[in-house]
Amino acid sequence: MTTNDPTGRKPDSTRVLQRFSLAGKVALVTGASRGLGRAMAQALGEAGASVAVTARGADGVRRAAEELRAQGIRAHGVRADVTDPADVDRMVQEVAGDLGPIDVLVNNAGISVPGTALETSEESWREVLATNLDGVWRCSRAVGAGMVERGSGTIVNIGSMSAMIVNQPRWQPPYLASKAAVHQLTKALAAEWAPYGIRVNALAPGYFLTEASPVDQPEYQQWCVEPAAMKRYGLPDELGPAVVFLASDASSFMTGSVVVIDGGFTLF
Ligand code: NDP
Image 1 (cartoon, protein in one colour):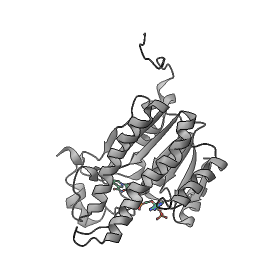
Image 2 (cartoon, helix red, strand yellow):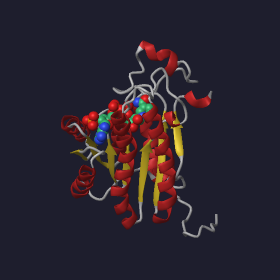
Image 3 (cartoon, rainbow, N blue to C red):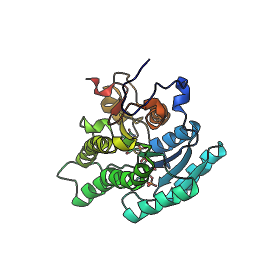
Image 4 (cartoon, helix red, strand yellow):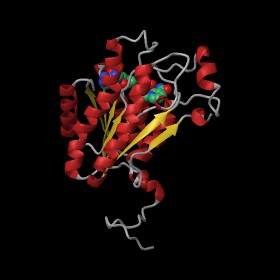
């Protein structure tokens, strides 16, 4: 097979599962003390990466790192709040010092404050946007600077199907706005950093069972389970293979994409 690719890229003859390998890579996952972030840190570690797990709570971070190390994964826990610029800079330096330069960034830390538009305080609006949007922006820039210098890296932002639908039964306007912005920021960074060998994609999960999303409770059945084509919610480990795909060479020609994983919720 011949190629006219101006970058000189040759067809990759690496065997397909090998392309998912993250051996020798360093991954940083924000909000990784529990829930989806914890499951994705696990998946990246199982794929061979050294993994830095961060969150605000020191105990959760320490526990997550210990659990990963107990499974033979090289892991480092860093307490950091993505809403605090000084914390983010320190986090990136600490991870680079302990594990090496960051090859994979997963921007997962996120919160939601339920309430109608008129109930939502200015403070709640700011808190949600500061975490879900400013956090992604800040961590991407802090880690992206090194990736640009080195000419490689992958970033996976955790958006949401809430960028496309309005969740029920609880209203949450700041959350919906923040996730739509994350999807578009993903495309902006993908376009700008593609010339530097950096790929930026997003995952848009549907309903997954976590502490923040107790969709196994009866009151959510009608709203979160029945409308999905697959008639169930997802479990955090079901996001693992997708994040490994987007973080690794397996997705070498993908950037600026938003991959929806929702059991068919948004089909209707
Ligand atoms: P959880 O509440 O279970 O976990 C959130 C994680 O983020 C925790 O580790 C938390 O730790 C951390 N975190 C929260 N705020 C900050 C902050 N300011 N700085 C650093 N870390 C922080 O949530 P989920 O696992 O359910 O959600 C994870 C991501 O997935 C979020 O972005 C969410 O919007 C998204 N998502 C979730 C869906 C679901 O159904 N579960 C669906 C679609 C998207 P700590 O509190 O110690 O800081």
